[in-house]
Image (cartoon, rainbow, N blue to C red; front, top):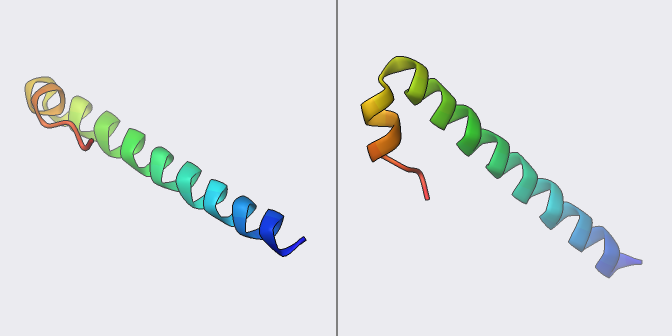
Length: 42
């Protein structure tokens, strides 16, 4: 059971990171489309 909990925690962290990256990218795109396209977080 502990391993599944760890996997779940890793998955949630990964999802949170993805959401944060997407939101930052959208904010940059809204702020300046050229900057948002040229400066990718990944």
